[in-house]
Image (cartoon, rainbow, N blue to C red; front, side, top):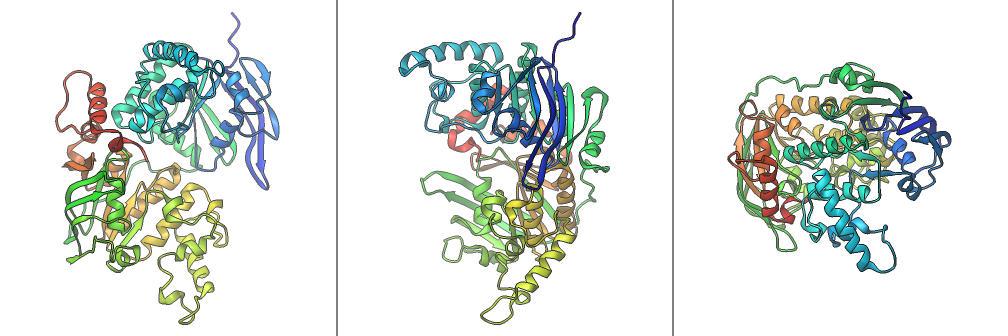
Length: 534
């Protein structure tokens, strides 16, 4: 019996952007009806390779075969025609359109919209039943949670007759229950003969859901192995080129005095939505307090208030001194004067100016430092350059070039620049949001080590992360936020991802029956604003 042709075969794919070789002679075969994982560090070339397959880029050389036939993918329409669909990390949905309107957008039967909507409604019902992709076709996208939005993206691809699905970091903003449901959907798709390419930095997901995994490093394909024949440690070493510590190595905390005291904190945004609702907690010296929760449940606003970006009511005390929350003195400069450093959730929008060079970014917020002043009127740029070069060496920023624009660094190295700027100021309190979002495994290990080292120096750390594994391994104490409130506190050794996932969905006790259904109902009850991803 003749073996089936690969669903996808790439031969000798190369792509350069100027002097940067993003992909170098890459060959890969993905068999039909399998889930194939692709992993690699930031800048390894994964996204470029998938963008070539989906028609966003054209390879400088190489060939693409779909089901054994050579094809020329010139754009995304050609990819869709070849049966390829892609679900992006940042969803491509029109927020004020309904689910149904988003699904047919660009795939209408004719200029008459009504017949297209009627046919799409019938097909959507059949697809939803076949693959457990239950959605409300008349719901407006801006009113539904990220789990529902992701299902809409998958349905969009299936509606266009995709036999090959590419998913880019699909669980980044999902609760554990939603992620489990997504994996059940992917298994259903695989059973129906669909081929799935999964791009993720989460090694546990690779081990749980994939049949085969390919590893990329520095633009080349270093290995393709059967998942059952490898281990997380082996994959990490293939990705980074050295052994990687997959757990956070830390000693028990030495808890000191209260550094941060938050009491009855309330935040209402410009639209009148109550984002933070009566939140109270303390953070001590020598302690990491982790805040867990699905994105959009008040964690961002909490960090913005403490970082000086947002007004609030209630009280916040830092080292026993009251912090102004009215906006009169609420800015980053005043917070720094209180001993607060802040690594924001979105490094590109809030932590860096992407067109500015690294040395300029390391001075932002600290440009009044006496070390940086040549006179009362002029800054000493050479001193900043020297200081930046030293920070880059200590924090292993690659390439170690202070003159390189921030946008030219990978995500992990951008994060290291922000961390170096904030940690090296010896703060009493470090606010850090999503410390390893979009960061490869080698940089994750380094960032975690820096956070623990600061805690071991007796500093207080408030950590916000949607990654439960990160929360559990880094935190000395965990608080869970849902719909702007703290649902409860737990010690990491006394809880697990299942319990934290229920708290993240607003439940303080385990539900009877199907836990995913109960979680979904609770998220829906909270309203779209409470659960939407940022």
